[in-house]
Structures are given as structure tokens and as C-alpha cells.
Image 1 (cartoon, one colour):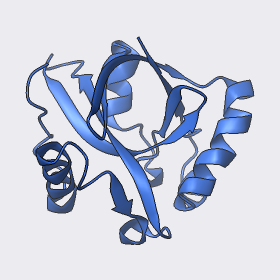
Image 2 (spheres, rainbow, N blue to C red):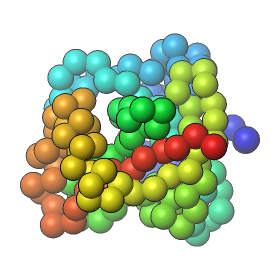
Image 3 (cartoon, rainbow, N blue to C red):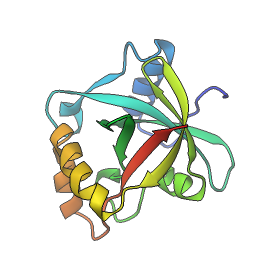
Image 4 (cartoon, rainbow, N blue to C red):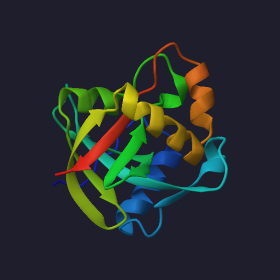
Length: 151
């Protein structure tokens, strides 16, 4: 896999978070201070690399995650914006992704949780990062919950 690349339009604090994560294999950056985004406490983050559906280039972002058995779970909230985040549209087009959790780097297949899965996973993710609940009230779209299954 090539060196992770962040989209240019990201805020500096996200770029800095990811740079620390990459430089230290997650020793610095794995835990993120959720108070910066309106949450509480330190939350775990992973690096998700998708393939751009238009550019074909690998794009990497740090995301808050939870666990469901051996799988990793992330939320495509985009802060409650009316449209899905680009990374989610990318994995819809190509569900094969790369994931880094601390120093563990692996390929995964992403899928959007169906209603049954979401009924369990959404409350779990809101428990990890409470602002997700508020984000859902800001948008008419159902915020996707994404399951990343190691392959």
C-alpha cells in the first residue's frame, strides 16, 4: 500500500491527527480527545483508506470506531450534513478498503449495516461518541453505520 494521503480540504487539526497516527504507528493519535468535537473523553480512532471513485487515488481519514466481534464499525456522519461523506461514497463504489488500528494494518471489505445490524450498532456508536445522536437530528438522511470486515 502506498503512503496514506489526506484530502487537501481537510481541516488542519485532522491532518495533524493523522500525521501523528502515521508517524507513530498509532501510539500517538489512536486515542482522540472527543471534546474537540463536542463529545466526552478519549475515543479510539482508526485510519480508513478508500479508493477515490473519481480520482482512483487512495485517500485516508482518521475515524472514530467501535467493535462488533472481530469487525470494526465506523459512522458516516459528516457532522449531520445533508450529503454522505466522500469516503462513504468511495467505499460504496469500491468496498475494498485498507484499515490501520494502531500498528495493525490490514485489508477489509466494507458494508453498510442493514436495519437489523444498525439497531445494535447505532446505539453502540452513540455510546462511544454522543454527538452522533445530534448529527442524526440535523439531517434527513439516515446516517450510515459501516462494518469493516478483515479479509
